Amino acid sequence: MFLDDFHTVTDDRLCITAEQASRFAKCIAGDYNPIHDVDARRFCVPGDLLFALVMARFGLAQRMTFHFKGMVGDSVPLCFAQCGDTVQVTDAHGKVYLEVERGGDITHDAGVIEAFTRRYVAFSGRNFPHYLKPLMEEQGVMFNPQRPLVIYDSMGFSLSRLDVAEAGVAFAGATLDVCGKRGDALLQFKMTDGETAIGHGSKKLVVSGLREYDPPVMDAFVEKFMNLKAHHAMVE
Image: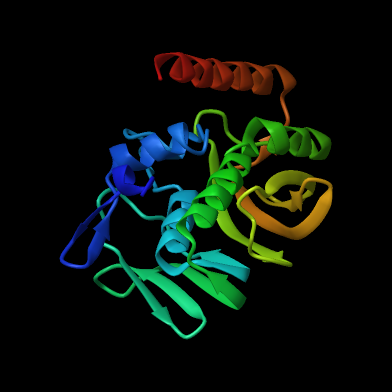
């Protein structure tokens, strides 16, 4: 399974090290959010890795909604459990980190699930600068470049069918609602098979520590961000 390198299982508990999580973010998702760096002060496991593990363990359903309820730290033992149409990811103390609601038909075809997961995660990893920067610029706000904090809140999708191994995932619009120093970004996406629409979905991000947009500062941050991404690609 392509996720084997990004987690370990001991005594029915799943653990993700900071190194495994950071490698998934960069190598699979193309996600360079500093919060996923191994040495980040507020390190957390990428929500897209938890999404991928749920998909691999419990299958792809026609309708799925993921609610991210907490930030998973380095090597936290996790339990993935299903009860009816709900899947929960919790720690040993019962704290819920992710809750998933499912509906419709379900496929457990590993090839279909991996292909769909890879395409969605690749889309999701393009949050910044591709989608968030234009939104922030339009609203006249930006995060603190010294401590950028962009958190996965939720995502959901609906598919008309499950033979989606060749499905494309594409951006379909976005909005940013600003309330003080917090912004809620909603990114829309669509799934297609060639020219045929087969599904749609959205993901919500919370952007904290907002301040007035400063073009030179943001441009410098983006340049540094893209240079780090290019350097990592060359090393890989």
